Amino acid sequence: MTADMERMQILKMIEQGLITAQEGARLLGALGEGASPAEGAPDRKARWFRVRVTDTRTGKRKVHVNLPLGLVNVGIRMGARFAPQIEDMDLSEILRQIEEEGMQGKIIDVEDEEDGEHVEIFVE
Image (cartoon, rainbow, N blue to C red; front, side):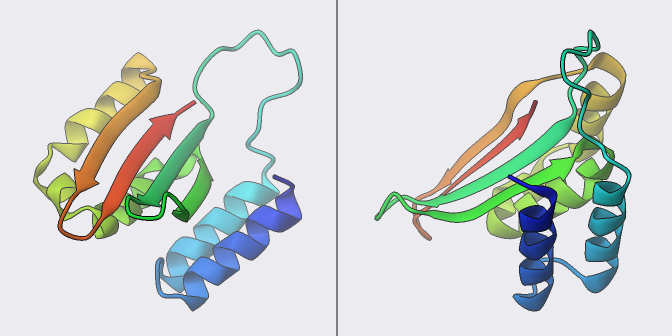
């Protein structure tokens, strides 16, 4: 996804009320800093926080967001809006593992049968 497409996605999320204008400004600022790693860089630390929400009835994606890892707090709060079960989790421990221990891969996988949504959160 190009930077322009990511900017448009952030602006649409603000327009739809998925994130606040303040959160959107932080996301846009992080995009401007060039948060993606250089091609072939030896550093294997996670760089991106990805949130996917899929409609379990149709299989179509409802939300597809890629955030620079520096904005992981925003991403977790956004994911929690779609899956209230996440709010009961110890998010501070998840954040600590990501930041201090370099946790990667799928970190949250929740299926809400009542609302027909599947929420996945990855760190890559």
